[in-house]
Image (cartoon, rainbow, N blue to C red; front, top):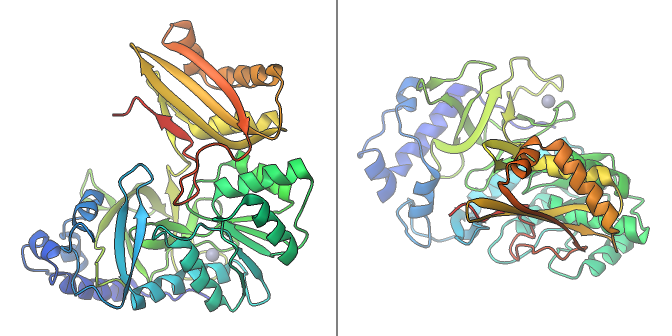
Length: 429
Ligand SMILES: [Zn+2]
């Protein structure tokens, strides 16, 4: 029971085949000036990296420039664009199968198997792939699929989960926080539930504790380290600390590159993730600069898996720029979490610029009414935890700071993914 491991030479061979196929596309033919010399790692590293902007401009349906073959026997999926600009990509059905095979193996390694009843709590539709992808993963695991989705009313989701008693639930952190809020308010639980598997968003420590205590689940695991454009790039075993992932070497070729010095990173050195997908040749993703920072871990994993380990850095969630400093949104979550009931960990922070000063509006979902004194206490906790906020108030940069309690489930969710945007920074134009 392990993810296949291939050597770096084998990876280079496979990646080279993909790069040669890529020359059939208009985009790569131009990018590589018609040729690819990849007989060594040095030659491979001479290939220019692929930027996110290029994928956006040259992807289906706006363009067919990245396609190496006619579009047939394929699935079109959305890869993101919660901020208005939707992005899409195409997989042949065989490439899709390779992707779900890798993803399902990651779930198997976490101990999910045939006797599990898995509640699929993703939104279906809008070309969003999660619901369908999980369906295929569950089939491969031979487990029992409960295709409940979150397209339906939350009350129905809860009653179906209570009726069918899933052992595993798979969804987004936003959903699990909401479910925990409801469980705490209405006093229900899921006695058979042994694992929560999340994807799609960062899960803060405060939110983890909130979910774990309200739902009585100790095992809360990330489905993987994933990029929408390249697919799963890391999976966890029982020995992996948060932020540490095994690389699925037969599925992705991952390089860590120090771009300042144009060289591969040494073990332990933080550098940028560059990924080549080894199973996609219809829309090749070659040396894609993902935008994440990571380092190689030296020691082999205690689980015995030969696939190397990477440690992600700087994926602790979003940061807010305030008065010259960067504040982690998790700091807001920590302060809200410390207040306890009836505060949810689903919140939205909106920052706007008004005549050289800024305004801060924090909306927090709560189960029921909240006394003003509780909101005041939260404000004091935030001012104590975030010096930049105190300084901004003292120096009069902070025009207003309001904290509002809103009903559970009332913060706007993306209709496509179900995510709550935790930060609305109106200063960024
Ligand atoms: Zn391991």
